[in-house]
Amino acid sequence: MKFMSAEEIAKTLRPVAEEQGLTLCSVEAKSGKDPSITVFIDKAGGVDLDACERFHNAIDALLDELDPSFGEPYTLNVSSLGADRPFVTEEDFAAHIGKKVEVKLLSPVKGKKFFEGELLFYDGKTLRLKTSEKETLTFDAANIKKVNEAIEFD
Image (cartoon, one colour):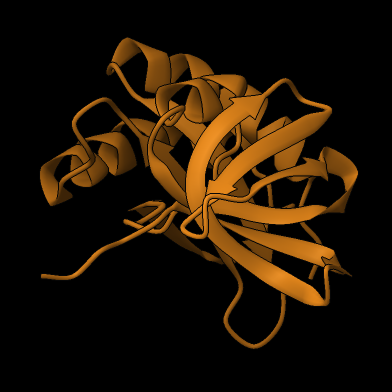
């Protein structure tokens, strides 16, 4: 089974998300035994089940018209990215300056691929982090696999 590109699907769905005060973060189309399209959304204050359901209902007929699976059946899922969602936009990074984040790298720096600390700076090219050991590290954005807010359990 083949789907149209995730970018094409997202382009069609983004205006609906904006109308509902949501941010369309990403679209994943998966072929195989259980083909599906999963649309990840976000909004200030977080996404609840009602927001997912409203958005699902709003895009269902639109996707039927678009026919992203070229006539083949699939399951449509709408979800938040979750508490450990990766930062995607410049706004994600800007909103977390001064907060504790987790950084996962593609290639090791100082023998490690995982760092946790306060996000000091991000400009799309580099990221600066202050670790709990008070060490300031700078990472090349091309070496970053994922950055997300650090979740602390009480």
